[in-house]
Structures are given as C-alpha cells and as structure tokens.
Length: 83
Image (cartoon, rainbow, N blue to C red; front, side, top):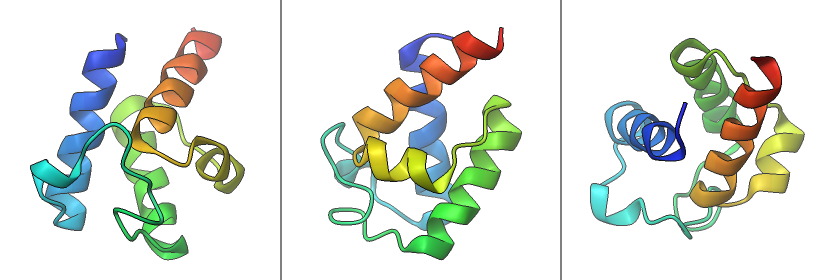
C-alpha cells in the first residue's frame, strides 16, 4: 500500500473516530502534543489501524513515530515486512 493511501486512511480514522479537524492533521503534527491523543486513544487507534490496514502498531511504535508522518512511515514499513 502506498504512503498516500496509508495517510488517507489514518487521517480518516482520526477525523471520524477522534473528532480531529482536517486542518490539524498536518504530517508534522505530533500524536500526543498537537493531536492530544492519550494512551487510551492510542490503544483505540492501534485497534482501528489493525482492522483498516492489517497492521497493529504497538505502544513503542507510537513512541518512536511521534508524528502523523512518522506513524505513516512506520505503518508502510510494517506492511512491506508483512507482505
């Protein structure tokens, strides 16, 4: 799956399930800072991403990724490894 497609799915999840505005979903937006996602939100996000992309990020993945852009890169890499 291409990077752009993963970005579209992630943004859609953040808008629909977490009420984030499209304007706030810049690639450099941090998950905990700018988007104010707490640990429970990240657990929900992991579950939703798992169902949508067949890749479920871990807590450590979110820590490493830190931003939307970082998370997209991580998800694309995980999908490549799984294929």
